[in-house]
Structures are given as structure tokens and as C-alpha cells.
Image (cartoon, rainbow, N blue to C red):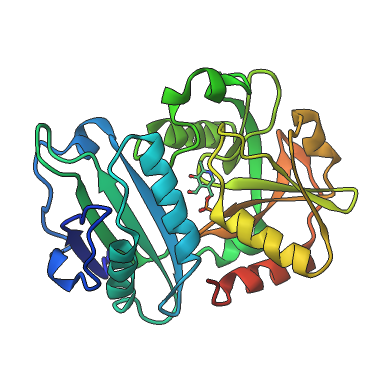
Length: 294
Ligand code: PLP
């Protein structure tokens, strides 16, 4: 991996009144070891993160990502991130991203076992080339998440609405999708409600309305989906958050997986049944997602 830059952050308390934070950042060699073996992020996946798309050095939707980082911290009982400090760290790292697409990751871990503070760091790396998947799309299979659509209410400790570092299940779902001859997956609740992909949100176009599963705590609220809805609404197109039964998937006349770095990948097939694609619309959506967004 050709890393671009990495900063360790000495996290400020949420009531810290400083306005400059440069002395709380330490640039580290991104290819050298930097974490203690006692880190709870590596031992237990106990922490949260964000992946921010960067286009020609411009980090996209920083405020939406920071808001979600703060939301994830609340759900995980982590200290509230000091947002001006994280904003400054993102700007410092973005300065090392050149032309083209990159990805900045923010990581806030519970820290070292019995240690005094969380551990925090920010990295930048070149993004993979997603031009082909944006144009040619993904075949998906639906996978049962094994939880019903009310699980998040009954069992908030499942942290389904937080972007935690515990992604082993999400990665296993993508491997299962590939075993089944597809490229990616959509999780469905055990009572048949569409949730999200392992690393992306789902948008369906049904009867002229752009529909996405309501972020009721069972899924992560995608920053890219939010931004796409703003763009759609600005054009007078209808958008809707609602409970989406799995039977609606094949009623769509187009559908996409959306995420911060891959952006909009059109869905070409669901469980082996072809889905119509709209290359012109998908091209315009991705052109918007690649334009500077705040
Ligand atoms: N849902 C899950 C589970 C994800 O991991 C992601 C992104 O990584 C998303 C949705 C999409 O979020 P965003 O658009 O903010 O990248």
C-alpha cells in the first residue's frame, strides 16, 4: 500500500478551548509500526472510524463525516471527539493528497487496555480505481443479517447504527457474495426488510421516486446517500426514506450502492435476476459525487 501520510492525534477533551491543534498532531511513518500491542482497536475492534473520499485534495462532506463520528462515539460511550481538532487534522492530512482520488480515514479507538485516553489517528492513501465498477456496476445477492428489523431497538448494544471498527462480519458477507458468484451483498433483516450493503447504502428508483431504507438505528446513515438525496431534491426529483420490503428490490427500474470512496455503483443483478441500469443517470450522479462537496 502506497500510503500518503499518517498523523497520530493526542485527543483534546470536548471542552478544550484551544483554537490551534498543530502541537497535538504527530506525523508518523505510515508504513512503520505505530500502535501499542495493548490497543483495544486491534484486540477487540473496540473503536469507531470514518472513510472520507478526497478528490483532487478536497475532502468531501467533512461535516457529515464528523457528525457521524460524534454519533458513533455517543453510541459506543467513547469521549466526544473535539470536532475543531478533527477538522484541523483532516485539513493537515488532505494537504498531502495530490490530484486524483484519495481516501482519508479517521480512527478513534478506546485506547490501550487500562490506558488513560483513547487513541486517535488519521491516514491518507490513494483510492482504488473505481471507474470500471461505477460504469459497469455490481451484481448483488441478498443475505440474511440474522436479526429482525426491530433488533436495534431491543438491543442497542449491537451498535448497528455506529460505524465501529468491528467489520469482520461485513467482510465475511462480501466473501459469501463472491462465493455465490456476485460482487457484493445487500443485508436483509430476518423479517424481510432491506437494510444496507456491508460497506454501502442502497438507493432504489421505484415509480420515479428515489427510495432508501429509513435510518432507524438498524443501519448506518450513509453520507453519500444524504448528499445524493440533496442533489436529487435540488432537481425536483422525489426522494423517500421508508421501510423497504425485500420484494421491492425487483420492482426497481434502477438501483445503486452508494459509499464515500466507490461512490455510486449501479446494481446490475439481484440474486441472479438482471435489473435495468440507467448509465446516463449514473454518470451524472457520479459526476456530481466527484465534484467538490461540503
Ligand atoms: N453502510 C455501511 C455498513 C457502511 O460501511 C458504509 C460505508 O462505509 C455505508 C453504509 C455508506 O456510508 P458513506 O456513504 O458515508 O460512506
